[in-house]
Every structure is written in C-alpha cells, then in structure tokens.
Length: 339
Image (cartoon, rainbow, N blue to C red):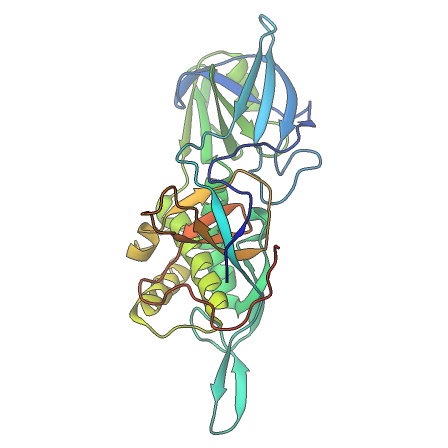
C-alpha cells in the first residue's frame, strides 16, 4: 500500500485556539524551579485541555499569557518541547479488535488479555489513554487495565502535561511545609510559569507567595514509569496492527516487563525495561488527528535515507515500533483512510 500524507510533524507548527480563562491562578517566576521570586500580575489568554473549550489530546495547559502588574508588560508561556521536525506519512490505520484464546480441538474460544493472557474479567482499553486523545481499541483484563493505569499511565499523564507533582512550599516566616496541587510547567523568554491544575492555591501557600522569595519542593515525572506506559500503548497498537499477539522473544520480554510493573506497589519504583528505554518518542503538540491508531513512516530527506516506522497514538504522540523481529507489516486487508 502506498503511503498517504498526514500533515503532522514532531514539533508543533501551530497551536490550539486561545481561550479566555481570566480566573486561573498562576505563579510566574524568574530563574529556575527551586528558590524563585514570584511576580504579581493578571492572566490573559489560556489554551489547552483544561481551558474553556479545550480538547482531549492537548496538554492540560498548552499556552498562557500574563500581564505584569508592575509595568504592564505581557509575557507569553508555552510548552518547552524541542527537537527535530520530521514530516510523517500515513501507511495504514489500525482498527479496534479484541483477542481470544482458541481451542481448535473443541472448536471454542475465550477472551484473553493480550498482556498477561488472563481470560477475564475484561475491560475496555483506551490506546493511548483518554486524556491523550485515545479511544477504546481493545480489551485487557481488569488487573492489567487498572494497575497499569495507576502505576505507569498516571506518570505518562504528568509527563505529557509538563507537570510537577508532590509539590510543597516553604518560607522562613511560615512554620512547616505547605502542600500544593499539581503544577503545570510552561517556559517563556522571561522566566517560567507554574499553573495550578485546578482551582486556587491553598491560603497558606498564597501567604508565602505574597511574602516574596520562597522555596518550592517537587518531583518531576519519572521517565521509567512513563516509558513503561508508552511501551504498553506501543505493544497493544502493534498487536492490533498485526492482528494477533506474537509469540517471539521481544513480545514475551515486553509482556514480562508490563506484568512486573503491574504487580509493583505504587509506592515502589518498577524495574527498568530495555524495551521501554529504547523507545523513540515524539510529540505533535496538536489535538488528535488522523486515525485513533496508525502506522506512520518518516519521510526521507534524500534517496539514501530509509523510512522509519512509527506508531501514531491518536496523532498526539508517536513511538517507535516495539519489536525487533516482527516487521510492521499488515496481515490482513485494510481500508485506506486518506485518498
């Protein structure tokens, strides 16, 4: 099948429409996270998933403008992604299906989880998860669905949203630390913005901000966890594309890594996975586009360059093909999505 163009790049060329959101609290600061000086002012425009009229598949806050109280200057903050821009072509869409274990002697079949092989109870599985723009694409067992969702997919959401978590504030004139909400980190030419995800900041934290310089403690998203989440999505997308769960060493190792992460208590960091670490990851910085799942290919810049297959996760994230042995080749006919 010939490749068809899907207009997406791994670095954003356009932003979602800006939305009015004047009441959202904002911390604007000079310097780097840690010890910094807060700046008073007023929010102007906001775009992103949590903004008025926002869409799934965008970061929680994608862009924000801020007018400084002191001199009236307007500052703009946005996602800090950087990297090569790679045009991509659509090769084939991936369609929803569930997996089953077949007993050929008896002529029967039963639902099976493509991750652990369990036969139930089963739940609908979004690939990728819903806030990233994913749709229901297959079924996994409740244990894989729920546990991987809480252990690794929540961390992928933090990474996708540029979020800082486990946030706490300190000030020399206020005794003790004060816990804060998840903060969304946005870069700008004059510093950075930290946007609380929902509602106002606790009053004790507001008092610290008004006092001037303060200390902030936080944790960044854990790459080990969010890469395991991306490995799960890439693995399921690859199985859906092939039409079966492959019985090859790569696939078995990926399943073992996902099962180990599933069974790891949330308070303990899961074991690292070589397959997760070697995934190549791109963002589109756009709302969902094209098929919910698809096989893409990089567009060669010259005749000597090979096309590199990528899996499109709702057109918002792109990850490398997870198996080294099985080539990304469709095993059954596909209906073209773009002419």
